[in-house]
Length: 200
Image (tube, rainbow, N blue to C red; front, side, top):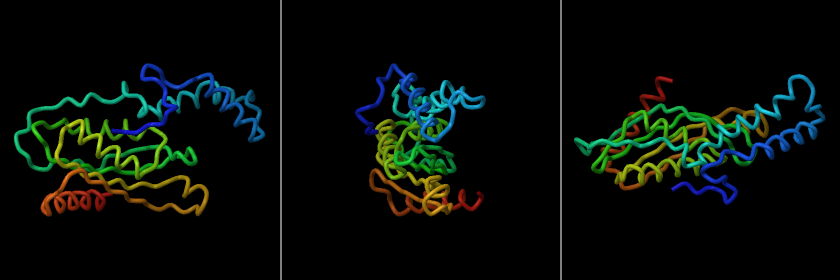
C-alpha cells in the first residue's frame, strides 16, 4: 500500500489551512512581494490553500474512489491506456504530468474501467516521485482488486526540469510489474501502449 509521511493529516481532516495561509504569505514576502496587494490577497488567503488541499487528496483515504467490483467472466488481461495524471514533485513542489497505462489479470473480480482512471488520479494527488507513484499504483491496485498481475507504465514531463535546471522538456518513463506476466500478456500490454502513444 502507499507509504505516506508521518506528517500526513488525519483522515477526517484536509490541510491545516491556517498554516498554509501563513506559509504562503511568508513565501510571498520572501520573494519581495506585498501579500496584501490586489491580486495576491486571495492567493495566500484562499487560492493556494484550496489548491494544495485538492492536490494532496491522495494522502487521505476518505478521498479514495470506491473500487466497486463485478464478477470476472474471464481471466484475460484488462488493459486501460492513456490515463492522464498530474502530480507534485516532492523536491521542488512543481508539477509533473503525463499519461499512465495499466493492465491487470483479474482474479475473481473486475472493476469498472472508469475506476482505474479515478484511482490513478487519487494516487497522483500527493507529494511524491514518479518512480514511487508508479509502484504505489501497481501495488495498490494489486491489493484492491486481489489481482495476480498488474502492469503499470507512466510517461511524464517534469516541470522542475522544463522550467529550471536543464530547462528542457523531456519524457521520463517508469514501469512496475506486480506478478509474473506471460510473454503474450507482456506483448499485449506493450502493443496497447504503443498504439495509444502513436495516436497522441
